[in-house]
Image (cartoon, helix red, strand yellow):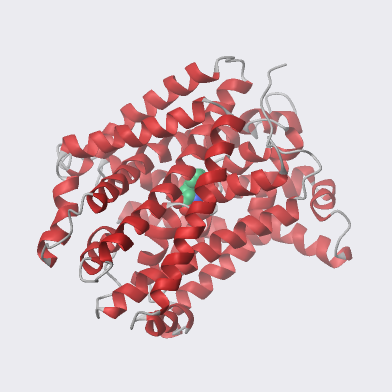
Length: 449
Ligand code: PHE
């Protein structure tokens, strides 16, 4: 029997799972899509999606991991039967984690570069144009992006290679409280900015005339990504939990923490943006172009810039760790005894494939498959297809294949028959239908462009 490792406590699981959930999705993507899709009304839809789709699927994944005590592919076999067709869901998860890390690490590398720039005062005394131009300069220099992609992957690989308690636990124990501390400090700082109340109004006063059907689609899709669902992450992390862990409590807690962090990050970002009367709808460049140029205009800007990019770097790292762990857990469970060797090999492969994503903005910018660069392809296939499909199937599996015993296990007798029915129907019908709709729309939009 291989020693797979185990979380030292449920609290440790919560820290690690929150570390996985809180990532670039919260601090980079959430503010910019909220900006693009019009603010308050989008936020409200997003909150609904987290509650109605995110949390139930989170519970389903945790159930699979916790009861099977196995990594995704083997977990479905264990719960259903040997060579079960459901193991396809596990495969999908392992493949998605691999592919997501290929481009996640590239963006993580950009964050490292911006952190380095902040620490070395590269933004100080520069004009707006110079600062907003830096992002373009970075992504168009192949050696720079490759260098940072390598640094990001090496750090991730080293942490995962030393195992659960010495690696992931130790890092989460330090980085997660540090992340929360930085975020709270930034939040207190932004209360005193002129744009604070405008930021609150933008995020929390819904204007439904701005809501498009595309926005709803994006909100459902994002609720997956931000909670690390649909690719076996929570199955894997759940498999290191004691069977006595309370799924309901931990799922709600992690989802809540993730949501609060996204909202607070949004408040910080938009307070800065509105203080200088900038456009909230700047898109993906919001974090790498708009923010640094605004930080540079403030008296304490360089400190804030260091704190901010440190926050993003920590968040990205703890998410990347969980992505790599999904693949490594599978290797270890299927008999590869040497965790270190497995991590080096798989990590090396992800780095290699990630090179294609890193070069998508420079050397390979004109190399397209259909309309897509490698970066767009890795991102698009996973976010639009694999993740929703994985989450949808996991939810169906737990509701229809495991049935009442799963619902019982999750609720532990709380809430009576109404709670049982609502949870069952949410997992069996509501969440899957919402996700299936996103899946079809997402695929057709993505292909048509
Ligand atoms: N949830 C992470 C984020 O918000 C991304 C992620 C997805 C991490 C899936 C692990 C698994 O950035």
